[in-house]
Image (tube, rainbow, N blue to C red; front, top):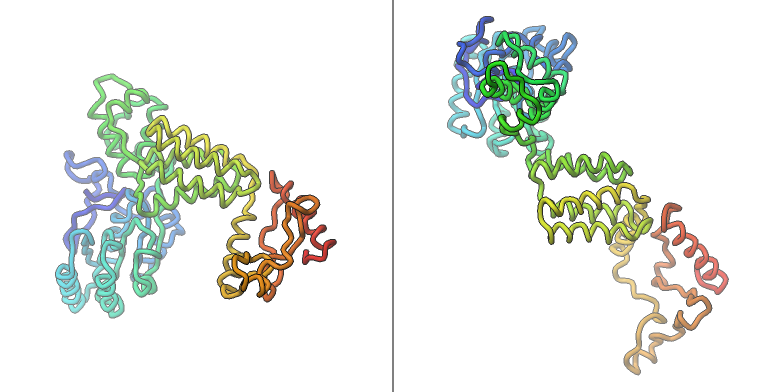
Length: 449
């Protein structure tokens, strides 16, 4: 299926033109029948296809450069590529990196060369271009450079990570945005006009359908078709009935790719930013999408030590207990423990002082790994070691006033260092006061404060 709203797997003939204004046959899927006839009809990508959009301006002089379309499914990447080819009267070739190999690429390149020798250029649309390996991606470079093809690649993955630097340097990356509620409502209104009948949904059910679409225009129209097929004559579906008769579509979420990393980043930053509501939202998003709850538990433990630390020492215990509670209870009962820990961490006082101190100490340790500790703090289990001064002058802190001797414990060649600087938030305020008092005593007793 090829449409405005998503990326179609099948290729069209090189000279394919959009369907006539009356559209495809009645039996075609709704998304196919609503496929736009011009860039101005594209919904949801106004930053690219609106009056001042880059894709509106680009073909005005009759030429195109190579482009990478980056965005989620169902946002119109395939259809926009076709419309661009028609805007400048280029031949349109489409291949999918999932189903194509080197032999297929060679055939397409040879056809494009013959076409160019006859005075016509080719727009080559490559769906899922990130699926090609590095060598296959490199094969595009010569035909892009000599003008054999204008490449338009489509990818749902971050091009910075998935595409060769050489390919990216020769193509402009344009970002397609997931549909928002406004653009999805526009699509449903177009569908109702095309069908000449309203969707049999009450307002709450309509909102639920939009959420089910998860920013995917093609999914919204497919769900609309399912509603029309499922509803009885004269029936208006409420939200509960809609969810029962239309199988819920899982959110777009690839646990090994951008969806995973984007949401865990959002969760972590919401906790760090002390926003319990946002943190709980992203936790639920990930659980709902099928994320491994124990992975989330481990990440909460990391947040406790990185962003809260000694400002609230209980945070680590609570995060670790939540992970263990889920491991013990399983799903769905154990998910509440993760939710409790998430809210606690987000609401806790924040400090990265230990995290910063650890990184600083590690740098110094790597640079000074050969230095010996001062001899007075080394044990002397043999007579020779005692004669060499091991343990000589060591003061047992518990025998000193306040259980504090004020000795220097750093290697003499390194001198005293300062890594941990507690904040004035939470428990660390009390730690800071103790450290200040120890520094005062250290100086008073001749140590290096």
